[in-house]
Image 1 (tube, rainbow, N blue to C red):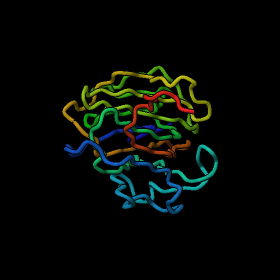
Image 2: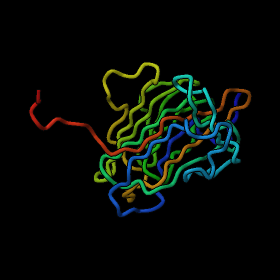
Image 3: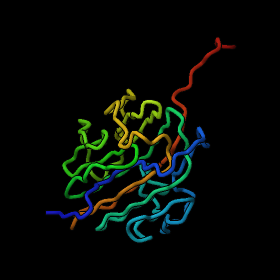
Length: 231
């Protein structure tokens, strides 16, 4: 049986530490391909490891969705690794946060987060869960470990609600539809995005390394043609 001191399989918590007055900064993207392999992300481009050692969050080559390039590896450990990036991302609605994740084993689900905006958890029982206010709710989606998934969160700072999208990277859904909609912010007083946070996992004797890739923060909901077609 596996044991876990820190309970996330892998989670994504958007912790807003500052209330920004600006609307938005430029879009942020990171695929780790320009980072040095086998080097910690701690201290690079505003990334920091807040729990665990520096070498528990390292850039690794060739373990990605495509099989080439680089991804960020969160080494399985107890207590589990916490890593994040602080910046003034702004408060436009919608704000889209996207990333790809390869989840791993853990023994139990974490307690629901009490701070931040939203969270997604790949649970120990193979279920994808989302934070709705201060509670976990089952999205109805199952997942498998050591496979890549694309995750997107659509934040609305006017309603303090968000939608969650999760799909297999190998066979994405034809219809882009959320697995859970109208989720309440964990802390409804937060009015801007200022930190992206990721947590790893821990399991004795089982695969417990989590991988992250293709992270972005963008503000475009959709493109729409407003003029007549031209020849």
